Length: 493
Ligand SMILES: Nc1nc2c(ncn2[C@@H]2O[C@H](COP(=O)(O)OP(=O)(O)O)[C@@H](O)[C@H]2O)c(=O)[nH]1
Ligand SMILES: [Mg+2]
Image (cartoon, rainbow, N blue to C red; front, top):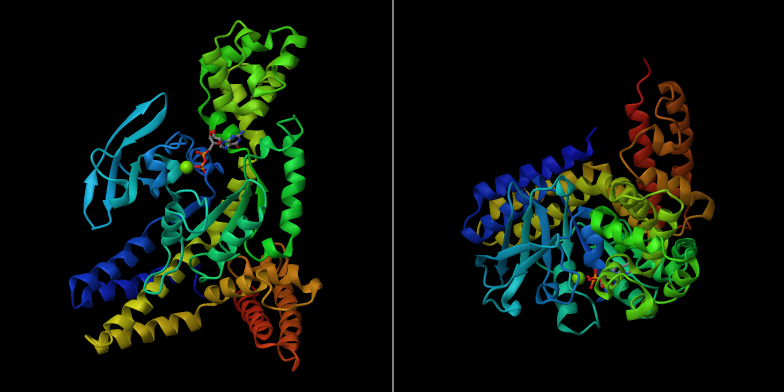
């Protein structure tokens, strides 16, 4: 039986022979790109409207303030953050050149200078950073989608969407929405109908961002946003576009992870303010920063609002007063806990990661197939060999089929009975194992086989329903294949 890893390795092997047999530099580069991709980490793009909180989320995931969160020139360009052995920032130009960029770190945040370069000529800013947070994923910050036709949106779509001759540059997408605005759904839709590789409900997750601002930043903001996210997730249209919707206060997470002792000292001073006075101050950001509101300088108060938001300030003060967190080391984790970052992280590690290798292999396969097509006229033997090997891989590998079935199921293309959805989802999620059948991993082999036989009978019966449409039949067929694998790997003894 193939493991997830070996699928990627098999595609990698095909890519390596394409590199070796490439008749020209261009073909070699394309094949090499597949090799690089399959041996590198998963690429997760963060997309959404301007000011949705994309860069803030990226920083929270890294635990450092790498992505600029202002509207500086670099926020208009796609930026990629990946692990490096040292610190290095470069611009990959549209004409293919690479230019080293100067950068500084001020107040804990990374500041990149474009020098004399025009952002219009820059295709991508490539940041190499030595942090373990980027070991298994590369994060991509995209310019905001203000409207479907503007320049930034074009750049983002160019990056995310599957183009005819090459697969998307992202393996998975985190889509940020402040609220499920009509056009947000339209944007999401535009990404999704491209191909399984670029985006599908299988590799996209939606984040209800800036969740702390819901309900004017009251202390129950996160509970309200959790309910709203649950409602979005139940929406059939959204369910068909992304795997899940989770609420997130990215700013709280970013600041919690980078909280400084001097900031907590200022918060402690505020917490000691007379309760009535404080109550009034916390009514709005304007009142909080009013010149005469506190002995703390206006500048200091404004920076607390920038770093925490009104909700974050309220939360921090309440926690300090309760004695739960009075230093950066104790208050920081409390802020992170309230932010929703843990749930998002779990989603990434449980949803994206197990499929990461499969998705990458799938992207590689698409790229190699299009390479083979372009080589047909020049080196027909090599092209045919690549095609044949890819075909064989695709048909013999149940994981590709699982991803496809999960996609068809999630986007509603397959019409299965409501009572079957959970069982099918379980089958399409992860490598075939007793867990696929809802059994404990330690279930005795004989028992697994008995359960598998009855599941095979169940899905086969469904697949042979003469009234079922072809897509639905395909999903049941794939379910049967998965269970057969479970059966085959459960050896009594
Ligand atoms: N209150 C609050 N503000 C946020 C949050 N995330 C981002 N912001 C603020 O919203 C603004 C835009 O954030 P940014 O990350 O640059 O958005 P981007 O344009 O999508 O990259 C900045 O001023 C952030 O501080 C959040 O979770 N809560
Ligand atoms: Mg940004």
